[in-house]
Length: 449
Image (cartoon, rainbow, N blue to C red; front, side, top):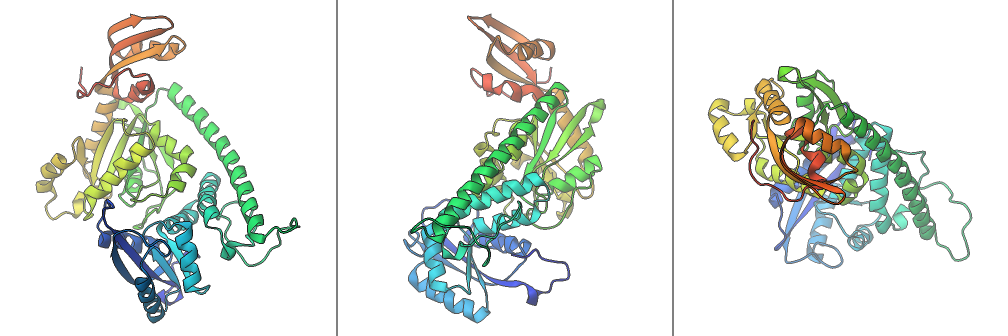
């Protein structure tokens, strides 16, 4: 799928037709119509022109074609009528569904599901070597179980771009009775193994970098949020960074970190991270493990919410669900209710919004409204508010024990065979360092000493 150029006209774009299914009893964050609207935005980001859509309500997915046989014929007629060359499904198709649909619609019509589309967008927006490796791994992990004749004779690439398929290029000698498909599967498995090795080196490097960062005692704040919520705009506003900003999904992919001075002279590192989305492909979460660890090991999170979006609450839930999935659900979080300048009555809406999103600050990242309040709250959570902990540390963690006595408030401690148990409070920025040693979680709110 070619990256859309500014001068590209609608007539030059591939024409796509959207298909959505509402499966009975399947809980979804967005309604079927809203989910298809989001799929249309994804298609536009990928450089596709959407020329039509259809939906179907089902008790369960059809065993062969996901949608029913009658709906397949309807889609065939609509695709012919709209002259579409791509059919986009709003859910991830199983390997069997994909094979059956490809066989029914023939070689002239491409079948893509939401996962394949998101992977393609990530491939377009990965500008660093690390990002390209992560995307390529995710694409191969997705393609391997779906490999058919249509994917054979893989184009050899030196890295990046996801190893797109082509129609030329030999693959060397084959053993007796070995099919091209088997050769391609083996080649993909070999490439996946190589990519995992490369990314493990990246992960090790990131861990070393984070360890040095922790020794510097400068806290890390990760910006998280639904894609297109305004994280990059916020980072630019508070740090003077020049992160690329566009009104489209996944405009930025590679994380960017900037040093920011907080009120009172404290310093913090603010990291812009990849945006989340409902139905975030599992392959992406796995491939981007090293990058997502930047979130999981942050001292606190700022959750940026686009309050002007009709599905702001559902988008927020998608973010919370993803944070739990990457084991970052217990990190202190502050919500930045963004784009209040676009509301009819921003001032009247502030109190209502803050009640809907506890521990929040209303801002406009674009206009700069509320940024001082936001940074003040970040400073308070990092340096002024203390969180209760009940931890058991082995004596081998001498640095953490010393840090607890130096910067925390020890209320009770008990020594055992090879361990020390401590109850007390620590500054919010240090909470994540002790979470793996927690004996029990105290649900009380933080206190300001």
